[in-house]
Image 1 (cartoon, rainbow, N blue to C red):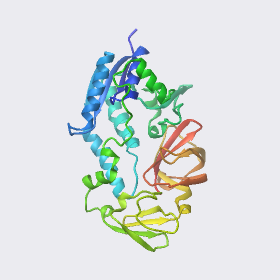
Image 2 (cartoon, rainbow, N blue to C red):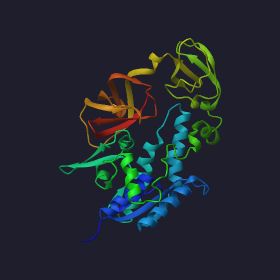
Image 3 (cartoon, rainbow, N blue to C red):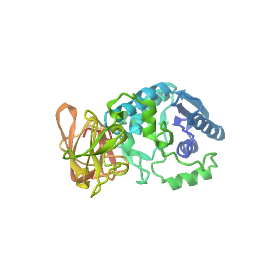
Length: 350
């Protein structure tokens, strides 16, 4: 019997390396593919490629490098900059999964004749009566289903996520058991294209310096009182408390960003919370009926909360939560769940 061919997106890290080893153990014809996402040959990208190649050689599988750096720059990096200049806070991992990993790479894998694309994401795919569902990873501390909500049902049928049932501790132990060369490699916690996770410095070096979002302005209270100065609206996020540089009787938090007036608006802790938001750019894995009762996360690290979702004009939705949500932030994704099943998601407008 001809083996099924599985292409593994290999970043040179522990998760993707173990993914390749597990699929090999399960009898797949495994191919390792590493995406080159940066044009500078002196960057971390080369280390990732070399580590992935070393693991591929150790496992005895073929390894390819595909150059997607132009698409990554155009779709992910440029969008990241543009969103901050609009006073919004994007999640580049969501966009990367949509346009690069399960966009460009998914198409490449299909074109080379692979039956499946596999990644090291901590999420699960389940098939019930011929329908494929995306589900939370069993280890909720590591669950990455949030960043995968743009997947389609058709894609889910061609994707394998071997780590969805495992915890990070189990992954480390298995990597050691397989004697993978990267079994003790630290996890990457930063945005891959932002050095030292310093997004302010990144914006200063890569964004249009004439943008209104990078110009000095005023920090004002929600009732219009000028409290201080700032060096650029883009350097602040909703809910931020530290680094405001102003003295006040009670703690103050960023509650709104006004690019046009170049103002950072601050208020008390009660102004950071709300129950209602709107979202657009919606994607549903399967069609939904409205009003929709679901749970939702308003950012990767937040907890799910009960909500009611209603359609409004222009394909957007209005989401009403049962409990107050802290620091609802424009540009972040809201992802909807039915228990542990991902229904879909969209981009927060307010």
